Amino acid sequence: IAGVAAAIAASRNNTTVCIVEKNCEPGGLATLGNVNVYLPLCDGKGNKVIGGIAEQLLKLSVSDGYSNIPDCWKENGNIDERKKHRYLVEFNPSSFALAIEQCLINEGVKIMYNTRFCDVIKKNHSITHIIIESKQGRNVIECKTIIDASGDADVCKAAEENIVSVKTNVPCGWFFYFDGKKIRKSQFSCRYDPYNNTVVDRGKGFSVETIEDITEQIIVSRNHIRKIIEQLKKTNPSVYPVSIPVIPAFRMTRRLKGKIELEEAHQGIMFDDSVGMTGDWRKPGPVYYIPFSCLIAVKTKNLITAGRCISSNTAWDITRAIPVCALTGEIAGTASALFCKEKAKNFSSLDIKKLQNLLKKQSVIIDKIPGKT
Image (cartoon, rainbow, N blue to C red; front, side, top):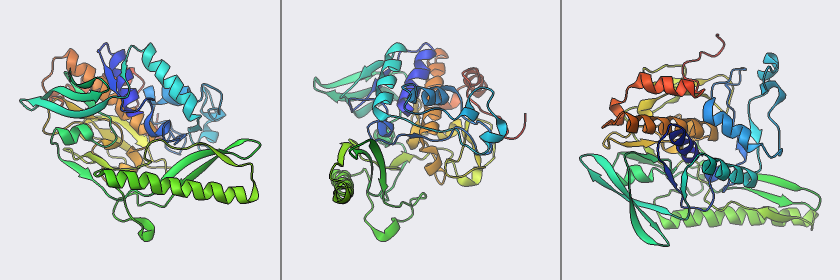
């Protein structure tokens, strides 16, 4: 979702953009992983804190009629009801993938499916080209900026940025099954530590650093799915699986270690370079302002991150959610377009006021104080 939002934002700001996608469907975990809950755009106290492309994608996710936006969050909705019901929806992953793809095409984004990012070519602390691999073999793409929306900080690692990697992911796999009458969902997951300090239940933790870990996490997760299906079949022989995840359901893997790392302790703190804000999907109340410094690389002048690989420490479990991925994607895409337009040399030297004003024009909420007008 981060890469989708970034590509849309950059294209809308009159920049030529391509999205390199190793899979054959856009949307990441939201679509390929069946994580079909578009978490809240609100703070849980009745205030919308995320707008822009993130809100547009939420609406797009239910444009097929699979579910509806809560009435209170529609135009002129009841304020008191908004305090009781969070601004979230559930969507059909397949419908959402189709809608996203058409949206990218309509926006003029060049899509490169079944294409893997391999490495970067750097000169004077800037990335001049990225190396990709596809059925055509290896090739290079010249770039003025690059947005790492890989979810695993793949570009950051290749560019030799400082990164944080964790080995605390657990078996997980949301799937859909038919019970003989209707399609139902199972949100299977072992318990996890949102701070990545331990592996809950003393099981094995997984990272993205080795083929063995990734493969084992997928197989163990699918074994759990098999057991759930087998158990359901004991009381209902009509049960069979309809859709299982086709990518590993990792929550947090690798991220940039930037100039600033977003912490839970930053709750309510406005930064000079704040470019967006979010609530906490886990509970009502907290609001976090997102500084531009959390997105930009430290050693590489034209590299910026979006999604779950931004520089977020104890707030990582918050910023990995779909709405924040879309938000940081829009920020990164808009910043990249401004970088190109201004012929900048470094993301850190961008005129932050210009960027903030651009984002505000795009309905991104930056400096709203919840509860005040």
